[in-house]
Length: 222
Image (cartoon, rainbow, N blue to C red; front, side, top):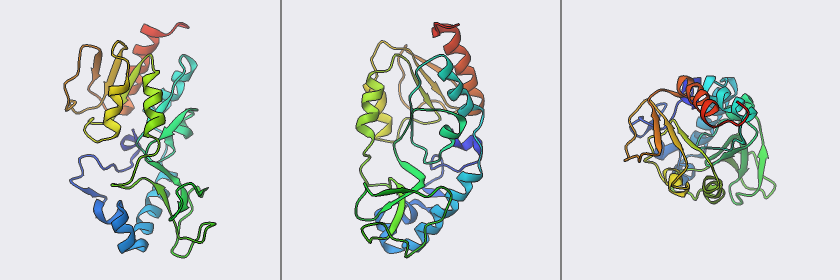
């Protein structure tokens, strides 16, 4: 989703994110080794996120709320879904706009686009860190996400190769009989059954197409 708004993603990056080794900037080991580098990296990402604008894909999902009860589960750490107008967004991997204690993951504060500097402390006295889930850390929102998927009457997967876990495993919680859609320019790397409809386009064009399909086929208000 965010790639079409000009934000870099992990996918297809060969283990690099904007020239940085992911091990150096997105792991606890990298944080302990050089917290200043990690903070600088996320400060730049936070600034970029604040300057980015929602694309047509984000807006189409928000507009679907006029027809459906839409719940979004995102692996992205920006707030473009919220800024596009979506009201129910669950962030699997945290938010760039938040900081948290290095000791207690429940001590979270909203910082908007502001930087985090070495020496900035949480209430418990520990160094503030980005409130994002790094590789090797638990994904605390995976259980509520699984519950959301299990209750869905329709499912759409957007902008993912479906190979990165635990997020990719969420499709297994969907009811077998419901219609499912995948929007991505790359061919899915898993075998999809007959309940899946594949839209081989990026989010900015594929999601508006998905919106039209959903309204025409499933909306009671149409």
